[in-house]
Image (cartoon, rainbow, N blue to C red):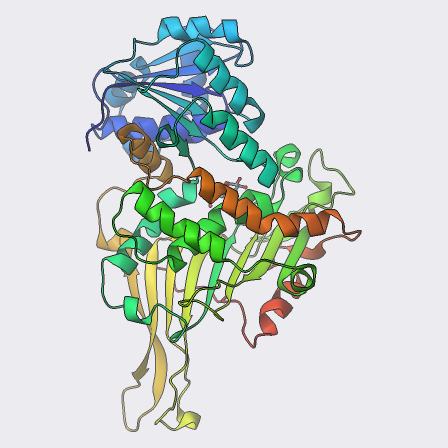
Length: 490
Ligand code: BG6
């Protein structure tokens, strides 16, 4: 699909996301020759700034996020020439005249409005765009998370944005869906026949999805304390990964075909009740500790922290999907800040062989596993049993490894590069539809309610560990454990 000429408008154009991710991603695609020659980027901010001042800001804040080997001075100069700064107070309808004047008339040109702002502004911005005649059939709107903080607020956002733009014009970003390994999971499942017959309850024992970060919330306390791990990571990133692991084969790779299947998964998740919640959901909060040998403060002692905060920085839960394919297969999800390692992976563990013909005392048997590693290095690992060399049938687990970076030497694309390209092409597959977003909130809502009414703290865990002991007990009750041993370096 080709990219039609466009004016991309970045609300929050001086903010952290624009500087760290969006402008570097657009630069990378420009350098690769993906952007039409005349395409432009309008960065919006409230402060009055000259073009020179804004250019200096990009040099200072965005350029350092471009890797040295992709920074090419001619390409950078050409990219910067596409960018203009426009002063705008997003909450004031009359302020949009300046934007209108800066935009090229729509028609053959697509207008893409990227809302990298707090969600409290989404509705106002959309209304103001409409009032100024800027919401046309040639416009698209991109929404950054958090997309609500519960079901009601998500519905409100959907309704208000939906009054101005049609669903096919709305791109709700979940940057995990843009990651290379997530795309590869789709390729693994639906580009091969090998796994499909086994990808079901008869052969799979359990699935684990972990996104662990060594980072704390330093500097983002204000945002994070109002959110917590459940809203910040689980409601979106982890549930999206779960959907891709669990969905039925879609009829095509089109936006609605894939999103229809993901929606079915979300709607089939077993609802928590007050009783099952206590057993199946664990929240934790980090205390001080050591990460990579460096002493770090506890959550309540971070800069600007609330010393009595009960916000969770870790959550682990056991989910079940009530369908013929997955009934009875536990999906363990876990995410946390200040963990022992930074990694994101999906582990699909198969059942043990029904009867072993090899002497158990000589063999160390382990069930087959498929591990899709999203980060730090993207790859696919499979555990198989193999015979050890020499006399006698002594078996040992061995790993087959596929390192995507090694295998495909081509330059990598950051998640934002891929997602921005899809926005520019109008390809919706990797973006959440309104009903998906609401189904995800609906499922976690009982957990949010339960925690709101609990008069207790999250379980403490030391920074630099794998979370509270209760998370081990959660999976241990099923006779399992989290896969924590580091995979070999690729
Ligand atoms: C964001 C969360 O959505 O994802 C952050 O708000 C988190 O808290 C980040 O650190 C993790 O993304 P990645 O791509 O670095 O794993």
